[in-house]
Image 1 (spheres, one colour):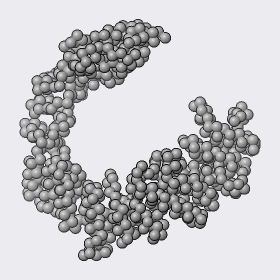
Image 2 (spheres, one colour):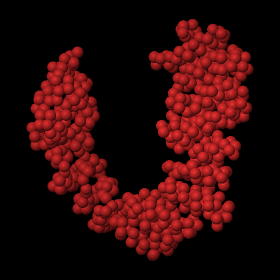
Image 3 (tube, one colour):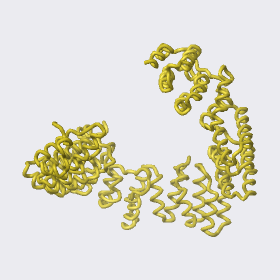
Image 4 (cartoon, helix red, strand yellow):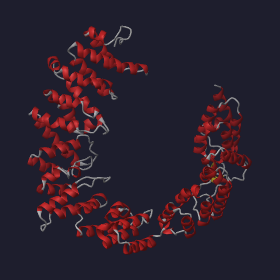
Length: 632
């Protein structure tokens, strides 16, 4: 109550939406800092609200920052880092302005800077140091030069060995470029502490500005620091010089193993067009001797600017050498979809190629490997490939022709239905059953309707229907997001297989068991729902097996699965032994929930029904009147 009264008294207008100019807001902040009735937590709440409502709050970092930091560093540090600014909007002036270091709060800021340095609070120190260095303005050449001098001076003066110098580098690190003179000074002073810092700075230099620091490279070689010397070369070598070095290495090093070693030691960091050109030239000059090196660095070549034209040249070269494995890998991982599809169709219609060789290359192109994104075929190409090689479409090319929420493959589906290809139909159905069609994608809705009609007609043969659909359902991924309302409403195939076809799954206890053990919880729920159908005699016949298989779902994380499992167990328990097991499991789940202050009503009803029907089983399960569930 006192905290609220202080808040209103100190800055009611500031907290009610009125934008105050910096001077008036400074008086409000000062009053809040001096208010004895505000504890630390209440003051933090008031300042959070002020920072959200008042644009000029950022201009007062020099006022509230040091005070809060000294008052309770652990509590206020997160707020300080979030709201730390050296510029802001001043409603009094109607414009943005900077808050210079040499302003009314300079003494407090200087003391804050010294305190952060003594406490080795690197993040706060970096922000304060940059504010003092640049006066809140963008950094200029003089500011960067001053930073380099301060960095070298404090690095050389600090005590505590390499660990202390690393902390200095952390505190004084700024997003500015390091020069060779300063890097050499740091390295000569303490190579162990400076090595990683210099490499980090060099990794941020653009490729077009690379230049080898010969003095630093010579110093590393004199010390025998060959790993750092090689790293300097890889980080600084200009593209043209590296390309000439690769040509010289290729010309003079004859042993293949030694050649690979030299190439790896001189392989540059970063991505640039000359890298792919040099790799292709190296491949043409030395052939298979450099394949291990080429395979490791293909992505760097094709991801660089100009990689499209280089990719076509590379494909021609590896095709001329008949390296079909490498050819297929490049097409699958880095080629655009149009080029990949063009190569597949060109291979399919090549009249001068033996059929065995054509199928071998198509398998290489279809097999899904480590590529991040699977390149897909268009519907027309998929039909053309299916007309000639249906086994390839059902096999290695299946992931590349499966329908999705944005691509339906209606021609391929029509061809599969015409041919009666059950394997392909079931694979396409399993791909679509969990998809919510995107608005406006007509072909997906068309294929979904065709599949729904197909499986509805198949339902007239329940044994055949279950033998095909159950394996499809139990293979659904448990990681797929389940959107029951939207999915069952907009996907008629999912509604048919997961809701309408439930009685068909009762025909075989093996099907029910498979559904109840499926990885996906919503498929296990389907099994529980199926168990709840039919008459009591039907449930009793399969209770011994199916009810026990439904019991683990009583402790499921999803309440929908748990509710249906409780109903299935209640219908399926038909002897004292299964009732005891069900009571023990349900009561164990309930005990855990009730200890957390919640309980599932369905489980409470299950325990009550089974205890009333099987009192001896309840006694064996250890249920006592005081422990059992109450009414309802």
